[in-house]
Image 1 (cartoon, rainbow, N blue to C red):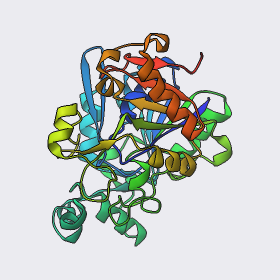
Image 2: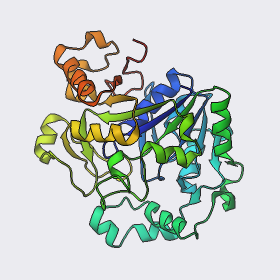
Image 3: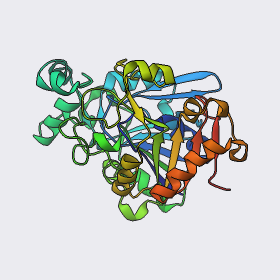
Length: 334
């Protein structure tokens, strides 16, 4: 630290929200800023029995003194954002970059039908059509949206001030590496790049100011929507293992496959990952539920971690052992 980027290592749904919220709280992060696409990605945070379901605000929301920002690269649905700001009463610490673009009603309508919906199973949240308008230079900017008055600022300038003053900055990515428009399983991808480099570009942070890139991988692989997924299991087998999940935004069932060293290794390369966070460890190894001490893990669970470290060549520093934020093994200081 002070600048840490969190990025997904698979197809999204890796549990980035839990990792962002844990680091944000544990490290007393000054500012958390979101890059990525828009409200087509959902993050769930469970802290002290309260569940936060977020589509726009950074997952570090549980840190009462943490500033929450959306970078210029993010597409903003004002209704979704304002609902979250109101619900969690974070008006005083929220900022939207003036150059972010707005998802309008026409984008929502376009995204709920058509060939993309049928071919790849888009989320219907308007992000693809809004990004298309952005590329065509006809999108509406956040600074021109009356509903966002009072939230607009220069996020790029602010995040650079945070880093230059040696305060802690957390940069939150969305989706996962293999949903990247450039590096993913095209055409079954999202509408922009979502690797660490792109996330930094979204918020206006240059590469020399990044200290760490934490790649989040679930202990098994899941994917929502169409597209290739090596090792995919049948729905019945996924249910037997307790791996069946549903998308936070769409509610659609997630397809499942065993952990992929092949994908994780490539994702680490594409993102210049410095460490790995593994989530849903307790689903793969139920006996580890809510454990916070690595030394107390059974030998076969430790072996799983050590094999990942050996194959990919970077340390596994955080292990999620339960839904709650505090159900985390933190090996960063060991």
